Image (tube, rainbow over the protein chains, first blue to last red):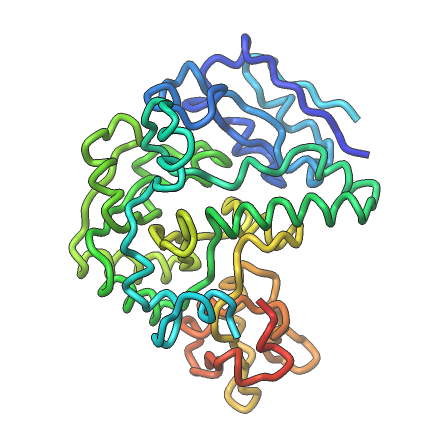
Length: 78
Length: 278
């Protein structure tokens, strides 16, 4: 069974400068990307950045990302 | 023999020493497809990393071998046509730096996406060839811009990154055209991680493998932290470094670190059973 990681993009407004969850994850499961994919100009706009679970097979459901998030934006379900 | 050498070496010792493989402008693939049909020009390189979805991880999780094999094949086919990498020793990469111009350094897309590293800590990725002029012209379209390097500066930077423990790899952008020197580590390099964790052949092993000379190895362990591929371990029983030749990617980082010169890089092709382990 794989965990599901849900990030509320409305609460997580500037992941590029926060990145606490990315750095705390012991197995580097989370990834940072843009909502628009590699599109000219928009892909470097901080407003377009989102965090998502990527390497989910390595998620141990430790909840460190949930606890470190200052905006309470992350949910992990297993 | 390395299939890329068979197809693209054209008499050179390795395919990445053949200057013709650096001669194409970047983005040609995209130009021939979307942009040719009128889509807005987009100077971003095509990446193969976003091809793996939750479907693949779920198939792995439930041991669905058929589904895994099918998805692997699809991803490998795309990556080998468009964008894949091969591990290269420091010695070879320094020769490559003398082959191609211009060379520029830029932010690493993998560490950017896995760690959100700011550009000032993340200039570890090198782009080569005429595509760099495009990014120079539109710096705002590539994160953090690019900085052109002289061949000597490029060599110094690669040597420094090798000292830091980063593995040198070459990447195609529209195979066989090589346009990237990456300096990678596990777990934040998408290529190493996809290859080592999922067994997807996205990063190819290099042309050499590392051998430990047990007479010379004194068990000092200074090489142990250098392996990014889970090929090198320490045997307390023998008090020696142990290298799994079948898992070794041939980057040479352990060899450059060994104070006893007990690790040597040997041609993969000199071992019949390793000659086709890529």
